Image (tube, rainbow, N blue to C red):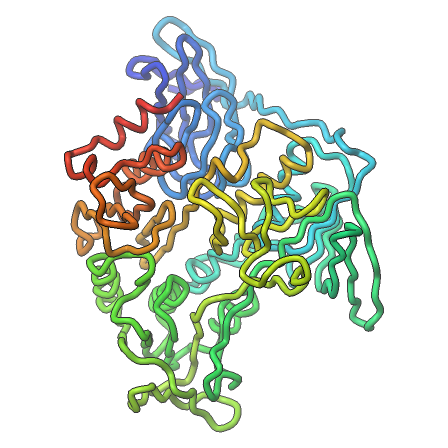
Length: 533
């Protein structure tokens, strides 16, 4: 019941060390956590995408979102793990007998005073997820110095993963993609410089050279230099790749161009990774293209990520939505009249009708500005993303150590993790976990279904599968070899959110189950609770 925004909730059934969500008539959700006789109340919708947090898991002090594994502190709601970019709204709660009285008008969140390192300057190169998260976290955790964020893009930082999902499908407006909301930079006193290209980075001087539109160079130095230059699409060297109707999908402008070019057109997508698959799903959902054909050298989709059984289920899902596949062949050439595409010739000699071609052929890290200090496979940094004193490299360019070892990972959640870790390192805070205590996680959304993947496996072909991928209900654990005592290094899932969260928590803590344990009927959720501090 409600009375002047005070909500009465029964404390019965809320276990010590547990949580429970309560849906309200106005579609809001109240989340209650309990530690002994102490109860805490929060807005129960994840601030990232609105998931009911009560459908997730609580492991120790970690409240974990069922959809994208955003993680919050169970006592104060503070952000522990992205992809959420802020903590939970916390409400005052009092106990009256067996009931809890939650006052939703009483927001008791505390924001740090921006009084730390007030006389310093931080320059961030790159307006993607890693650069944005660094700036945002600095401002929300007490940094009082000057922040300059330099981006080659013509738009304020935005949610890139949604470009190949809801935006391309016509389900989300551009304004909803802006990170931090409108006027984020002004509200957080951040000097956001768009359409600016950095031509040189001088790590020994904590300085950069900015090349202005008129060709003049401007040198800027800082106390802290954060390099997050991201990645750029790989364009294969086949003939016709430079025709006007050939697109890559990396930026907002790319997505807009594809949307504008595909109405009643035959679209060929080259590549069966998650970008190619998401683009196919989004264009199918948009319903504007005359036909959609996906070309891949492999006989599977997402072949480096999921098993043949899961791949077949995804192919079936796409085919049911009108997408055609051509497997086991590459592209010999994109044919056209000198500007626009007229068809695609495949390496087996066959041809496809095509008016538009979308290249989903991978990306390469933009490491050239740091190539004098690191190899092009990734910038070697420590567990706090530091290259040298005061200089950090993060996001797609960083080859950093996490719980799984040293690797370079091109996923949004990892980029946001890097931003959190870098901000904490600049502020010299020891309450934020280093990368060594984190694991990779990503998801792909296709036709409203979200396949989630946690960890990093050398192969998807040594797994143990539970459920039925064709019914879009499964979890599969991946191992790097066939050993009975080998621990799972990754898992993917559709529709089994709590099991995947539990696996992720065990993996993060170094206690992923072995093949023998899983085959013996290991209760992964019970074990995740048992091992949580």
